[in-house]
Amino acid sequence: MNTKEQKEIREKIFKINPKKWWGDNFDVRFYLISKLKNTQNKKILDLGGGIGIILSEINNDNLRINLDVSFDDLLECKIKNDKNIQCVNAHSTKLPFKKEFFDIIVSGSVLEYNKEEDIKNRDKQLIEKSSVQKTIEEINSVLKNDGILY
Image (cartoon, rainbow, N blue to C red):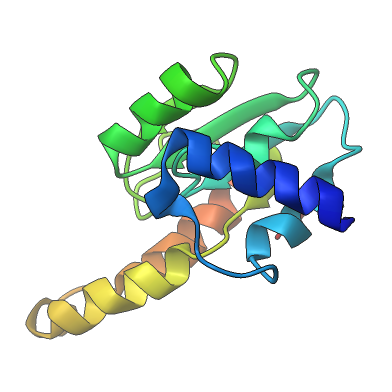
């Protein structure tokens, strides 16, 4: 991805919500967009997609689903970004999709938030699986056998 494209995406983020810019030109979203830019006719899930920047840069002939726990981010995705992105308000530990549904799953920073959640809830983890483990199991369940996880 060239610097002009990065600048356009950065400006788009600032226009939607400046708080969603992470601060440098090595933002993982640039890498993910460059990998997915020419993808066609695929079912793509952005797990923790927030305001939908990654999916908004991918061709409309793909089924693009943005899943996030933040209802406000999903509203910004629909209202300020791209109305054609399907938004789902859910947690990564309980994905509401059929098994082996997605060709591609993108997850830029969900596991780090899951880890923070696990640290806060250490006592509960003695009883159940960590949210990191649950999320990985859910991803494995809804991603096709020949699917790609970024």
